[in-house]
Amino acid sequence: MKARLFMRLTLIRKCLPKSEPREQGFTLIETSIALVIMMIGALAITSLFSFAISYNSDAADRAVALAVGQKQMERLRTLSFSDTLFTDGTTSQAVTMNDRSYTVTTTIGGSSTLKTINVQVTPLGAIRPWAAGPVTLIGLRTIVAPGAYFKY
Image 1 (cartoon, rainbow, N blue to C red):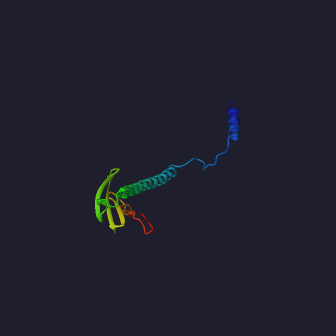
Image 2: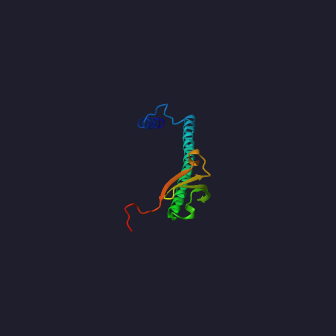
Image 3: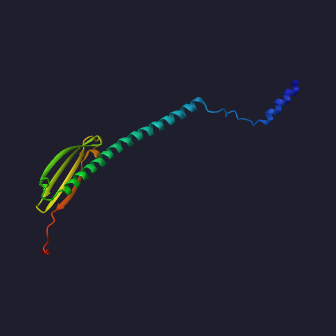
């Protein structure tokens, strides 16, 4: 009976694939090193996301500043050329849009037939220097006057 059992075990061992002595799986040190490398990569990606979010916020400030400037420019374009708001000079006002504050400085200058409109919008809550600079819009406005070839 003992011999039969031994022969069966020998037969089973021959059928099973032989394993190398080095093939024992990962060690605890290898697993720990792999985990540390993956954590470093995850931290790098996390810092990249926070960097991108702050830059997107500043870019949104610039986009809103441009929209505020365009709104001011369109308001001045709808005025009559002889309107009292269209006199030469500089005005400044504070505007709040989307919970952000901006300073709008409007400068109007020129002659009695041609006006130069300069609108500068400065975001007040910008974090980075490139986003804190003013957005400038410049427009020309002229009075419609009959030319030399006009006949009544």
